[in-house]
Image (cartoon, rainbow, N blue to C red):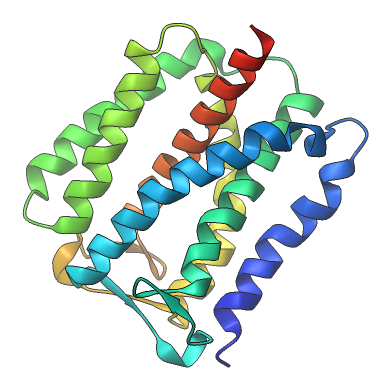
Length: 226
């Protein structure tokens, strides 16, 4: 039973890794951009994770982890920031390769403004809860930067498409993690509203994680081209 979280990590990355050699996507040829994007984002989110463990925002069920810890975090949690971003960037590139037409382009700015407004509203009502404040505060900063300050890279329409598709495995993986539960949330530090067993904030945690990874991925690609 204590291998559950490790097995979930393996399941998350198995098919994206195997299919990385697909002739149309050629995802393996983009690893030089994927790896630094994942590592940089991973460091930020690991610091976030460590802070939340210290603040008792969440904890990890010892019955479902192997027991190896680094800086107080389970090995599986550290692997999570490698396997999930890899799978999400893979989804992003698959969609770009197989569906190159930009159907959502004209709606991307409106969607971003909607999410920015949502961040402000939730910060107003949930300002006393650590998970809510840091989650939506971070998303607001990253989203505002990418949409309004970053002038050269325009990829948000492709990002939203990938995010919508990534929600499908998200509900499966995060459903397991929160239902068993592998990750135990302190409801005093979130809005205490769940979709099934998944905290509402987790949906936007995924958005922040995916957005930062894809932004850095696109940034490194654009620098290589230039």
